[in-house]
Each structure stands twice: as C-alpha cells, then as structure tokens.
Length: 453
Image 1 (cartoon, helix red, strand yellow):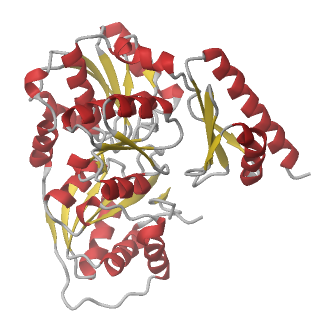
Image 2 (tube, rainbow, N blue to C red):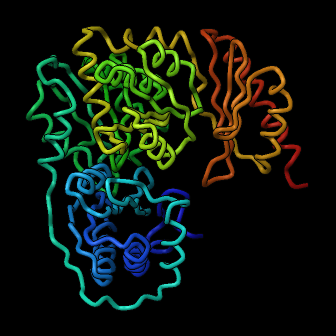
Image 3 (cartoon, helix red, strand yellow):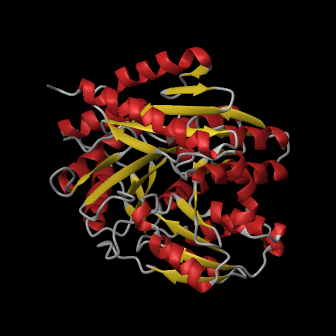
C-alpha cells in the first residue's frame, strides 16, 4: 500500500515509510517545487528524527538549503515558510495516527499546500522511481528557531487588554502543543490546568485524537472537577483544537465556525467567509447577519486554502476543527482558535455553554456518522433519487439536499470505503433523530443489498 494519500504522506514505519523513501521524497520535492530554501520540522514520534534527517539529506543533495526547526507543530512549519519568505516547507508528522505511523505534509512558498492535484502525484512518481541526477552544488542544513516570532504573531491576533483571568483545562495529548502553551502562558492572564502535557511520541495515554468520543473523557471530567471556564484538547501536531464548555460538554466544531466567523467580521466588516458544505445553515445565517459573504467550498484543506486566496477571505472553517486565517497566510492553526475564543469569552463575560447554546438549539446536528459501504456512488445516487426532487440539490462535495426544515450532506471518504453523513434541522431535535435514522437505514439496507453474494 502506498503511503502517498490525497493530501499528504502517511504510513507505517518502516514497512510503508522509511529513511530511504524519505530521502527520495526530499529529492523528488526539490525536482517538482524547485526551491532554494525549505523549512523542515517534525513531531514528537520516535521515527521523526531519522525520517527528517533523511529528508534533509535528500533536499541537500538536490542543492536545497534546509532550515531545520526541529520538534514543532505543523503550523510552525507553515509560519516559518511564509514569515521567513522561504520557497517551501515540509512537516514530518502523522498527526493523530498511532505511534508506529509517520508521514509528511508539504507546502510551497507562502504556505500554499501541495496535494494530489497540485504536485503530490509527481513527487510520488519520482520518489518511488528513485532515479535522480547529482546537483552541481549541495545544499546545507542549518538549525533555526522561529518560535519567538511565532509566539508574537499569535499574540498580535488578539487584544490582550480584553482578556480576563479565565481558568482553562488543556490536554495536549502528549503531542507537540505543550511547549507552545508554556510559552503562551507566560504572556496571558489565564490559569491553566494541564493534563497529558509532556510530549511523548509513544502516546502513553492513547492516540491524540479528541474527535474520537472515547478520547474526550479525561478532558471533560477535568473541566468539571476543576471548575474551569472551558477545556481545550489538541491532536498530535496541534493543527486542530477541540473545545469543551464549562460543564465538560464537547462542542461540535460546526458551531465554532459560526462563532469565529462572527469574530472575524467584527474585526473586518463585510469580509468573505469560506465554509465547507457538510453543515451550513448556522454559519450562513451568522455570516449574513454580521454583514459578511458566506462562500461554499469543497471539504479539504487544499480546497479551502485555494478558495480563500481566490476570494481574499478573512476566515475559513470546517466542522472537522480545521480553522484557517488570512492573517496566518490562509493556513490552518490550532492555536489561534482557542485564543480567539478566550478573547470572545472575556468580552462577553458569559459561560461558554450560554454563548453557543442558542445556536445549538436553533440548528441541532447529527454529528458526522461514518458507514462502510461497498458501492458508495450507488448509495448516493439512490439518496438523490429519493430526496432530491423535494429540495435543493448541491454537488459541491458529494450530495447535499436542502429541504424546508432539514438538510443533509453525504460524501465519500478520500482514503477509506466510507460514506460520511451529516444531518441538521431548523430547531427540531425530534425531526433530526427521525431523519438521521431514516437515512442510516437507507445506507445500511442498500449497502447490505449491494454486498458480494
């Protein structure tokens, strides 16, 4: 199985990704992107040092100078790339995968992503072939630490004078977020209660993926027991952050998109806001009420970033907890969202649950539900046949059908034989449950009928 995926590289070490392939990827990246200066960082996984070292050697042998920024979060590679005016960046990470996995994420100058339709397939072809010529002059690898500038950049995005002494539970998941939180803590009036704080690539407390319900209990309970104002948990490379209100209840990422969009429009009136098509009604209503323009875009970081640049959008958000900012070169950040939420909570001086409660009741959602199916295209076609005639149909990403009181989106996974379903209603929790059950019955029934005999 190839470790080259739709948006990045990801696989088991060493069976799918090893030092030899990492070296070849460095050579191939250089051949496709043709950079002179590239930032390279890595997460805390045990295999990261060897893979990053081989990657750097490949880049150097192709004549590329490397700024090795060491152990960091993915957004620090993005930051180094755009802040230092480099030609590209590569992050060695497998994010929320188990410790035996590793991978790479790639960007060009200004943090522009490289994915399957913008260079990654060419890198894959060259890396797997492994045939390269020599460079006239080899490049060098130098250690660099843009962290102080990165911290300053984060803090410049909020008004420090508005912050109240909030009590915040932080769960870094033994990933890379802990050291950054320590640096921010010294500059903020917040009181942090920390858990799973020390970086440890063996992930002794389980994979750092707060999107999994079974991984939320520790953060939730600590928020309740400590009386905190909110809780935050990160994945391994902290490009995503997840929120818990003061009751310890997990907050669906969908509602954060609307909240952050409203905050962006307060600072930049009339701006455009990019959002994904899985859940939309809450975001569109908030953006339009605040005088902004909502822009629908296909799910996926490469699509969101490209559309944001094209539209000059101020903010972009996905319900999967990816948040993108014009002030961060249109890249996603797992640190800016919680800083902005803390600023909002400080300004409004109300509990987090109250801040979002009205929106959650106004547009209840199913949360993303995954089902494994054999013929996803056939299932989607059947859904459109049954429901499309009665509503507005959109194919921006999979199938979305919007009716008067409810809507749904169903789309195929990029990497697995899965259908991903999201349902929302206009303030009707009973209808939500009914329609979600109805759609899942259709999927399960049709999938079973389509199974091999």
